Length: 358
Image (tube, rainbow, N blue to C red):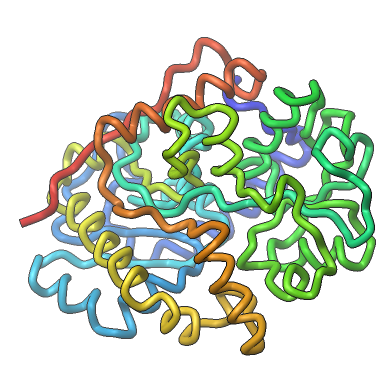
């Protein structure tokens, strides 16, 4: 028993069937660190990394601007990518060397694969917010007891807000927890579901809710603070560090990273270049891929820009990990154990700090 997600056994089998279909579709160019290896072993990547992650505008920018290809040619390493919203399932099926996942999902990944994993790069901070429909009098998650809360997953951001609900008001935010009605639906539909009154609240990502947020059809609680800002304010040792917890870190089997340090280091170097591109060309990236930010009009673009400038920018300052940052991220697992979202005898996941590739 690892992380408690609230999936029932019938749901688990449906999930396994789905992830298997997705995984098979995503493996045309597997570079060898996944299936076919004994636990604790990994094949030589031979200059190729098979990575699966959800659609990402910065990655599209790196590709479309020729930056990815230029860096690959210089390094002699190629990143072979497949796009899926079910990175967890593809990885658990053994069909990816590297995926992006939430840090706090890593123990569940290890349980699903039976093999140690390691986090070796950072990317996106938990930007999720708790929002209610216009006119809803709720002020906190405690006020939503018994209500319908929409989310896109039973894990990921739902784990973090579940810990907050448990810590703040002793309530259980899980599918079978009994204190809320958890509604799992597509990430693109969360905000509209609340705006229509088909759910009372949502655990929403701002960039998938811009139309509803900008038109006041939904209202964020906690002064629109993200899960990461809530963490820094209420739980972190360093209150000024808002880079925890992470919903997108780079994860691989520990054996794969140890066997292929050059490929792992290059991947993080490439993504660090992506962070620099975001910092220098943020508005251009949004304009180039508005569909990835739910932006349809100049007014919605201005709303998103204001959110990033004055509320929360969820991209990390750098993809590289250091010991201080790792210690801050590990604090998340202490709260997971305290609130029952992780067995007390499960150890913190592994973190690997890398130097930039030469």
